[in-house]
Length: 209
Image 1 (cartoon, rainbow, N blue to C red):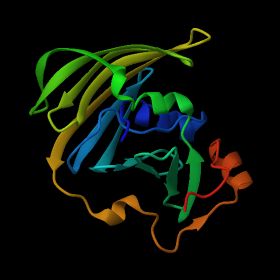
Image 2 (cartoon, one colour):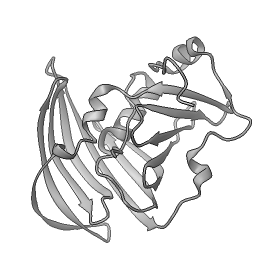
Image 3 (cartoon, rainbow, N blue to C red):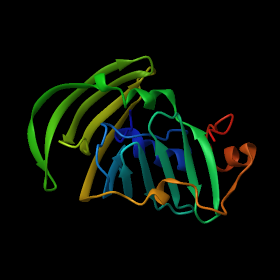
Image 4 (tube, rainbow, N blue to C red):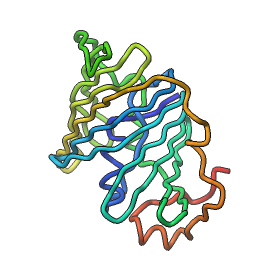
């Protein structure tokens, strides 16, 4: 199972603002939890909240014109974005580069232990060349696989470098309500063309349901 975190939100922010880049979560959290998520993407800071049950995640982000909610599921390349102000849900494909972020062989050697916001973690090196470019940096995982911190960069094939700092604060461990990871009753789905224009998303060609 893979659920990603590093580019997870680093991808969701530009996605809503303009670029098609959503995500999953580095590591494989084996417990339910909720936390405040701090992201610095190319120097811009974003604070949101996430919920996790093994195999599924929910990310919320407040933005000027939208309050998008991303629902991600392990083993699926299709995710849901909820546009809460519009009571609308849209399916989209996760970019292939992000599926690499959930692969077990992404992590390098362990280089020590650190306390990150009250939780003991193991720090791992990340340095991997993929068809889309190169990923470098470090990831701090708790013993339950919670990605507490990430410092890294992604260099694409054209040489463009994007930097990411990811950190979780105020982590509360416990099973989360299953309804958080479902599209709420009464939500409608935008036609693919309308959603594509509104969000700049690469939409799923067909439903996963």
